[in-house]
Amino acid sequence: SSGINAEYGEFQTYKHYFIQINLSYTMETLISLPFKVLEIPPMRLKKPAFLAMPSAMMVFGLVMLSYFLVLGGVIYDIIIEPPSIGQVMDERGNPRPVAFLAYRVNGQYIMEGLASSFMFVMGSMGFVVLDKANGANLPKLNRFIMLFLGLFMVIISFFLCRVFMTMKLPGYLRG
Image (tube, rainbow, N blue to C red; front, side, top):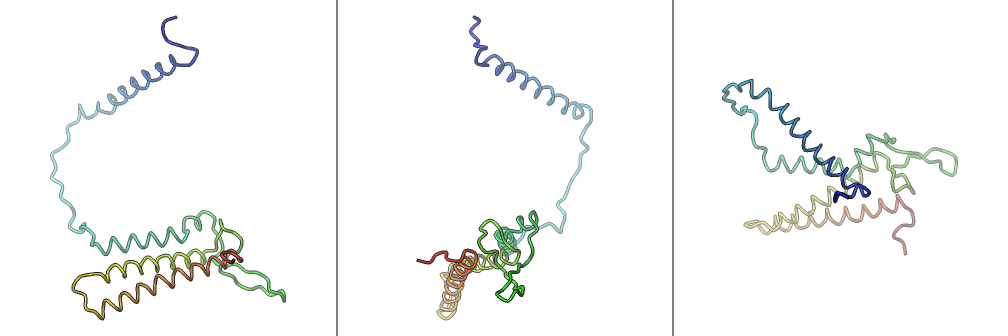
């Protein structure tokens, strides 16, 4: 026995490791070969004048837009292609439009996703407004208005999300 236990595959593992190192060295040599022959020309590149650092509010707006789209299920809507609203038959046999796909937690209509996403964003913006209400040198009236508006947005979004959930799953959250 040479000390290498071929029964458990140790020899093959070490052999594969050495082949991996050899191949990566060979690829590095092949890729670097043109740069040994060619010379990079001296260039002075300037940043275009129209490219500038975005403002904080621009970044915040893009983050909120992506938050809205992701929470609204846009990726799901692109892949599955559900209808914008659905319809159910009432007791007379007439079709009635519905915005929430009942009894399906893993499915949604487009309008359902957008409405829920709007409520989530409204609640998030309410917390942002509440945070801004604690700013220094803010007049008392402005502080009161911002506190009221932020609290109103958070409470309305919370209760409407609960209503949406009971529309989605009738009987949910009922004692």
